[in-house]
Image 1: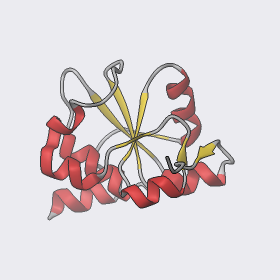
Image 2: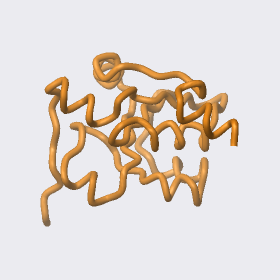
Image 3: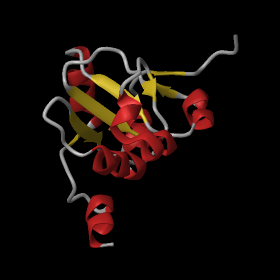
Length: 122
């Protein structure tokens, strides 16, 4: 219980601001959106890859296997930063992959006026 509270209140791993996230994305870091598919489809950061928290809970590190190639760093984002912190805690820190939370999530992303996209029907 204490570990969960630490994670939720910001004691559980590296975080970056949305502006720092954009710099890292521009340098080739992969952004994972851990929200539910409906939330992702309603609007997400450009170039974000969907990877719902439920899938991470079920598969842990195996959930990362289908991701595009990345440079060993992964940014995690959700609506406000809580679910992405949980995902960060579930994935932990591995030698081959560093998971970093985007502080404030998509709420901060939108408030900063950063580019967003919506899924289109095919």
